[in-house]
Length: 198
Length: 435
Image (tube, rainbow over all chains, first blue to last red; front, side, top):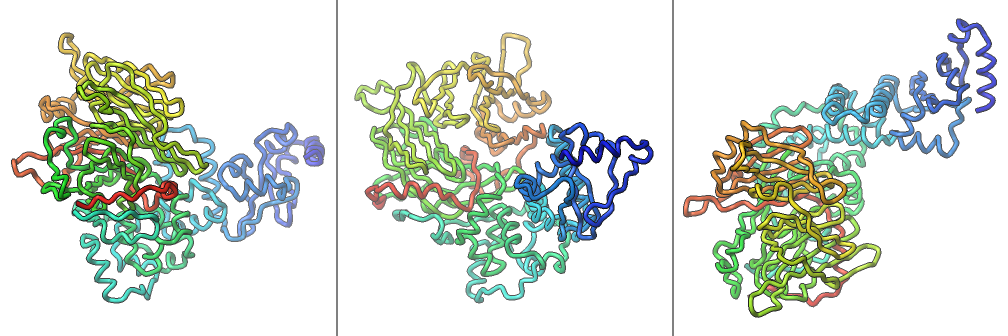
């Protein structure tokens, strides 16, 4: 952290128009350092940021607090010291930029608005999940990889609502279950147990 | 009714003969709007994630999903799936209702032919109500023998207590998977006790309070006994008893659990009896506006104790209303937290006609059942929404033309209740209920 401060202090001596647009190579990618980050780094503020790198090699800068609160994986990385603020970015090779941006959106909103009332949060969540099937699938895989419990609960809740009304044949089609494995007698038995579900 | 079988493991017992869940036609209307799911996307889901979706399904949908394929069918018996289920399954604040007459008069009417065990009106059907979808389901409790009545519910288990006066036998039942576990009988004979049950993943607490029939002169001697067992190895098999404060009557027959205590409504005058489990002590809490209350009930919501009642100040110019109070952290003061909108109360009072009503609460929901009718209101505390509940399509109408009273419990349907395994370690003499 000290090395970073000194470097930033030096760049702080530069004319503001230059330091504001300070572009440094970080781990092979280019990232823009926001001026407030430089100032805050000097002040040692809790608004530390971390870098997340999508599969398309795009870097996203996020408040460390936000990601640590939501993602178990990122929290572990920061805690066990494998993330070096100075040099590192966290590579997320299975998450594309579009999905990563959405995930960051979710975590940021929920951190900053966690005191909001239930209805407002639910409305925001519903709007957030207003995506197509591909988007929902990608969000699910990303949230699963990053282990973001509340986002996972939200997504699973949505999928559950999509599934729970569907007939058996329809569910088989969706998950491409070609061989259900029941004998005709067993199928008949299943049907008898829950006649109203057919 | 044949005798029941003591199931040792709630996980491996086949359940098909113990219950049937039938959905209502009303529920299909909510299903028509589900979006089309692209199989090219969803068939790529890894199995573990599919299992997680299944763990999220409410029980009726879960049992339907079991018919999809053999692998899904077997999940109910898979320990790894049940572990996942217990971790991720959301809390479902449902209710279950029964047709039983649980009132003082039952001890004078002997509905059950106890000797033969076959009562003509023995009907252990429960009506499961989902307040999220406003849907009814029916569950049979065929494992529970006659001569038992439902008394309490916690964490997916329903507590049934023997009707006959004497030492009481208590059964814990999970109707979803067809498991039945028996507690050791209470040492003291009791007439009509109130039962409190609270179950967590690692412990079971039961308190039985009421007249212990010690005196042959029919003077009530009110005492309570407590049962505790936990995963840490501590257990107290009806070892703790304590006496209740004088001049109390536990007529409501039911206890509500909140913050380490069981609460019970005390009548004439209205007050609340509280039992602190850890200190094994009873104390009284004054009820708010106690001289003006009608049909008070106790509920638990988000860990806090609520009292709901109709308020009628006939002498003052105060409109009659239905109010909800919350017990504050100090444990003795109440603050009014909700009131039924006046227009709705007018409608409600007309239907109720002074017959009284019963309330049950679970999570953010309160159900208010008007006695003698099949009308019930649902109040969602977090959304401040009042709705009339569609009548249950499965209830038989009494041949006299009026409807049996519905008695309800907060019930959370669960696919697994492994805590009952703690009871299996107690070696009990097997009690056969055959005639």
